[in-house]
Length: 206
View (cartoon, rainbow, N blue to C red):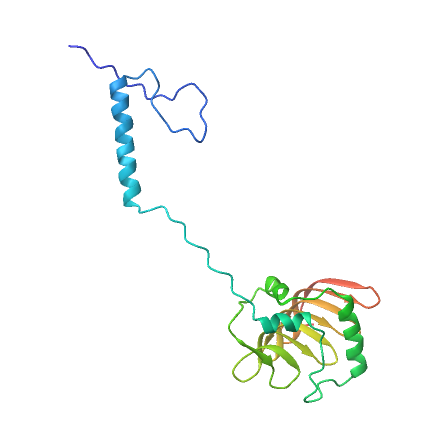
């Protein structure tokens, strides 16, 4: 009775690639290696069916920015006039001239720079004190993304009608881009004065 030769499970000396499955070498007993290979396929088939179909979950659709908010940021800032928001019209005109020199700050730019969560479903309208326009809560306070025109132009995030989050502030002295906290420049930011001086870094309630 012939003795069955042990199977050589060593890898072939031929270089393999990542796409190449592991197989016994050619010197192995043919009937035994075939049986090994088909058992491997059978186990693999069972495992694949136990794990369910290979489906890829569809990516969640990107929320849409309200059209009224998009339109506000591409339009020229204005005095909302109802309660005489401008204390110094000359200062506002200087800020407006600077705004026209700068690239338009889109609502999407604010979202991209913000570290705060964005609520895409808030109502968009003028605020309760008639100084700004943007996302407002049920009381009419700016909460989220908006724009305020006073003796300056602020475009960015708000909390209770106060600058809070990321935004751009333009006045008759220069421009600041960066983080705000409770109405103050706080966090990472950059300031460019009208005479060309640049200050960039971390601000502390300034």
